[in-house]
Length: 541
Image (cartoon, rainbow, N blue to C red):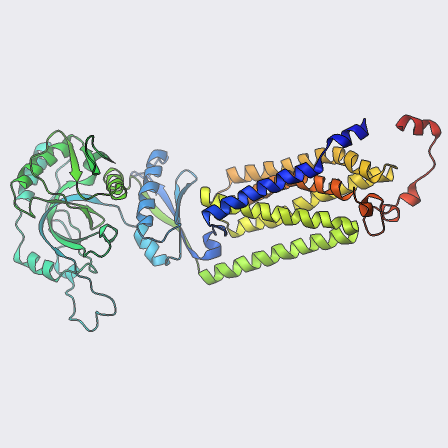
């Protein structure tokens, strides 16, 4: 029975299938032209900020839908910095973690600390934007400090949102606003480098957001009137292409108060001449759109058309829908890692992994002699397989390899070595029982694989539990530990075992020649073997 089982196994076919799968994964890397893994900020440098959310009342649990809304808003704002590969994730029940590579701490803290204030204002003047570079400020005439000369506090009390009549009366007053001579003078001197106070009942100077200025075009600056409608009156917005049209538009819906205010505002704007027939949508002090109005819009909904691409239309819709952060945030932690320190940590981690790998190989060749070739080949294939999977996961799931993740890979070297030891020791035990080397490999494998599977499953379960319960960088350790444990489990079945089965078919290993690791003296067979009773031998036969 045992010999028939051996004949049914085809280690050569198993190895061919294994190498074919590795070749397919490598081809995917080649097609994506990606050969290096994504690195976490602790390995490439950057800034990580942890924000802790609370309700406006400061009490009670944080609504998870609001937390996800805030994460989406912050993600848009971080991506607008143009850094690439930024990550904005929720952790726990009330925290958002923002990780951006190659960005200074102060710049990122200032960006995420803004309130995402959306408002609608009437346009009174427009002009080509002016920008004064830092190195030009000394040689050019000094730019007036508009922050010190313009009002910084509102002079009007905003009526309660439930008092629609009072809000409509205030809107009429705001629409009758006429820019003063000082407003026009400040607008002429205004450059996009400057910041001016954004007061809701005062005129405001703003520029078109940089990422909305087409390549090779000059941006715009605007003289805007007092705020007509606040962004939190918008209840929904979406981008799309209307039926029988080819251009992208953005539709938005207001609540009852917003619909009434918008109807009255558009009635006045439609009667004006350009540019006073435009209203600007302002986000955090930057104009993101300034559509013109040709007729009164009733019904609490409106459609904004223009030279939109799909991306710009969807961005505008998201800003209108999620412009204001629904929660209050406090900066809990800020970590900054320089690119140099990250490179040093990566080098140290690779050296540690290399030393661990070398020690495992030295032990294998010293104790198992030439059989250490199987260990060397298996560890090499484990490294190649894990590397390919980490690169592919970086592309598909945005998984970034961090320093704790690198530690998880190094720890997995020991798990892989344990599998070899269990297998080889079982084979040696079977050989000591008097079986041939080929039979010892097969019967030893049948007994060892259960132990290997159980041991790997325990490690995998530990990694899964750690991943679920941990937050932050520890998740990276748990993920790579679990991934490399799975690689070990697959490798021992589909590479190491078939490879050893092929090796023992050779004369050197199969006959237990000196240095093979299967020689009788090394196994201790000559010293421990004793003549067996005939009845026992017959039973075994």
